Image 1: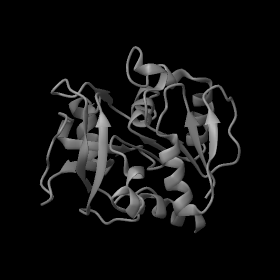
Image 2 (image 1 turned 90 degrees about the vertical axis):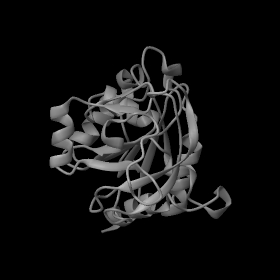
Image 3 (image 1 turned 120 degrees about the horizontal axis):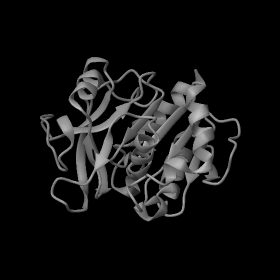
Length: 227
């Protein structure tokens, strides 16, 4: 799997993402700078977490207009796969590559702790390592993770199977740490080739990290691209 990770000023999770991608594929991803205007031949583009441009204006708002995002949009439009995690998810919504928006957490506090995610769809490149209803642990670290969309958009996401992950308790019931509409933690684009989520599966891919709960995402992507 040939993957590229986009780095903006303020990005701070690119190395974590690179570790996860290399562990799954055996191949180090390429680092892409926000001022680049072209992409090399890739299977996957990843927008990692952090605080792009210091989250000035709104989280992801400035990064959404970076030169490289024109190439990322074209890549996605041509059928390429794009993964956005935390700040990357915020950038994808600001770039209108995914529906909705990420607002300030309902408690107006930055949250940093493990959470449990429930897989809502298991037959995509991003979720093929799980089955629908599976639960896994992932760290979250965000101040603007409150997913919001109008009612019509929320109903469309539900009806078309475009909700990727929800926050949950250990028994699978919904748990909402940040106020996100319908406890949504991640969504897909309509063609299922763009995925964004707020928690960080890349931080649980090795026993030395405290677990391998996030590894199925990356192993699944590798399987999807070798078929």
